[in-house]
Image (cartoon, rainbow, N blue to C red; front, side, top):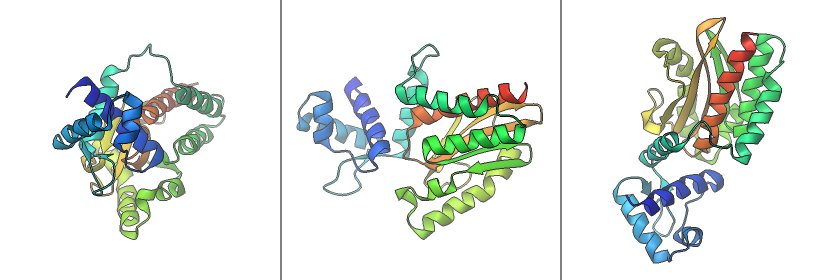
Amino acid sequence: MTQRQIQILIAIVEQYAEVASPVGSNLLAKLFNVSSATVRADMAELEKLGLIAQPHTSAGRVPTDRGYRYYVNYVNETTNLGDPLSNQERRAERAITARVVGGGLPQRTIRNAVDTMAELTHNLGFATIGDQLYMSGLSNLLGQPEFIHTDSVQQVARFLDNLEPWLIETAPNEPISVYIGAENPIGRSAGCSLIISQFRSPYSDRSYVGILGPTRQSYRDVISLVKRTGELLEGALYE
């Protein structure tokens, strides 16, 4: 891919996360200061690569699971520890820090963290400490436009039913693990993405915090939030 095609894919992912409607060539042409024809040609190449799709004949484009995976890998590879936080990341950092640091009893601290993640992302936040699962924001998740149909809700319900047993059995140990759409080992057809971080706690060697949302989400911000929440919980629970 050319650099412009990469940037167009990034723009489609981020714009679609924000507005939940297909992204058209006219908007991208203004953003990149090129003609709509040029953008359409680049979009056609991205579509051939399976990174974006056209849901309707006259519509713009939306990312595919493969496009989201490329985006997440690109963000992870190009983000450095010393990079300044975005305004959104700074606001989230302040909010989660205020709710977690000095939160009192461990159960209250964990609950505060999960509630805050759900509020900030408008998705479902969760934490699991051993056999104890904390969850918040189910109404947020089911209120997303992707889950307006009954069969979609049932798929999400099955996903949630199997989330805790899967975490206990699999014990993913990466600092951040991102499972997009069909990549999910559970609920492959639920249209969800799972972003989880393992963290240390004095109560269990299998402690996780994460976000469950539709594949359409602001991965850069959510990954940053989940990672930071895990770090804060680790520090708070060992105080």
